[in-house]
Amino acid sequence: MKKLFEKQLSGNLPLTKEILEQLKNKIYFNGENIEVGDVVLHAFLKGNEVTFNNGSVELPVTIIFLNERHIDMFTCEERYENSQTPIISLKNN
Image 1: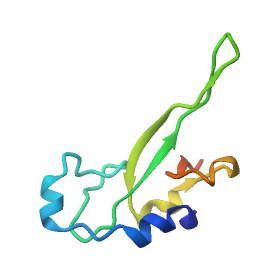
Image 2: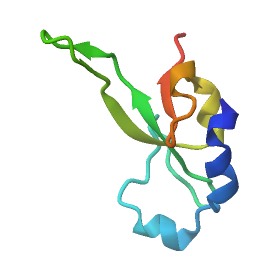
Image 3: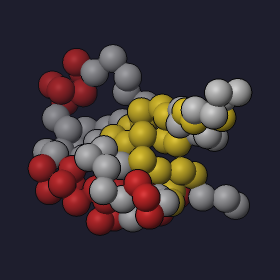
Image 4: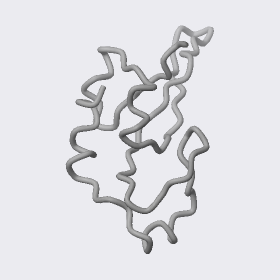
């Protein structure tokens, strides 16, 4: 999973107080506060595929913020591994 976030982990700088103060959303997907020094990552959280009567399929996704501590909470299907922004699902408990 960490491989999916390599570009973000190497390219995103740790959050400064000034940037944090400018963020509208200061909370990760799981309710934890985003803090100074965090390297904030983003991904699409995959919902359940919806198939319509005409046979078309839609994949609902929600963009979320996470950090390296959260990566192990997710999984990624092989067909989405080459996406520019990671498309991930929560692991089943």
